[in-house]
Length: 375
Image 1 (spheres, rainbow, N blue to C red):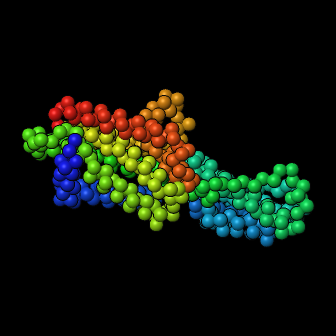
Image 2: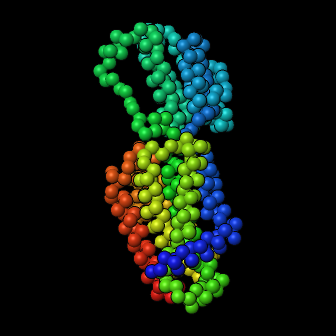
Image 3: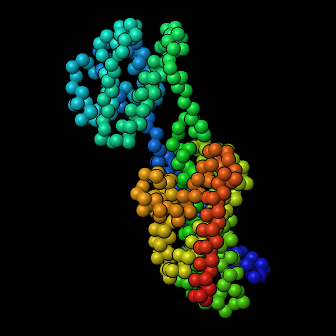
């Protein structure tokens, strides 16, 4: 295999990409745009929930509790309901998604250290949001209880507690969904752009008839494939850098692990994506067909079957078995480990082994198919 010939094909491909602003924008601009779109649109955090308050006690303690809800930024008070108000009507009209009911005698019972009933009515038509809101409310009430005990000299009561519950959340203390989603977006975007770039590049040669001209040269099929793949590998790595910069500046997602390990994992993953793109090109005769096949075989598995959004453990066993052949599943494990946990590649040897195996298999199959077709 001649390095000089590979270099000539790679330079030719780079020049062709530079002359096609649309393709260059897709390869460099589209990943960043998708990160912005999905990063801001896909957010599992729930804030500024509209809250109606029915304070029947009208005491300083009840006002402090309502202030704790509002100051948390999870709730916005939109209505102050009088006693006897129709609470069902409030939720039916979507005036508020939650209604906090503080009973009479709230402050008196607190002072007497009696059990105080507190009611929170939620609109459960959106079950996911309702579950999150319920968790927020429980945390606010627990924090309020702890602060009152400390402020009221309840140290002896705290000391007598049988269980000292102090939860600690590692790697993502604020439980921001962005920290979880951005690495998944990187895996999804790189798979999509990697597959489409090589698939469209080879099929473009077929449509324009230039493949016949390449046949009569002294280029070997392997030299042609490597020469056409290397430029898009470099462009994809550049797109990765742009994505990481955008993730840091816009979403505060910092790479805590070694950058070298991140580069190695991304390189292996991209080789698999580019190899799959070559396989798609061997099955397609038009760019439209290559685009459709590339979208279906890269985007859907990377979103649905990788654990990016939907937990794999909650899927049926048959679907779980299918996820084992999705490279994005393994790349996301490595990516989140390096970016969020600050780990290297050592704990993820099995995942890296699969990514290397996947890259080797798809590149080999693509080479055999393209060679057989005398590309």
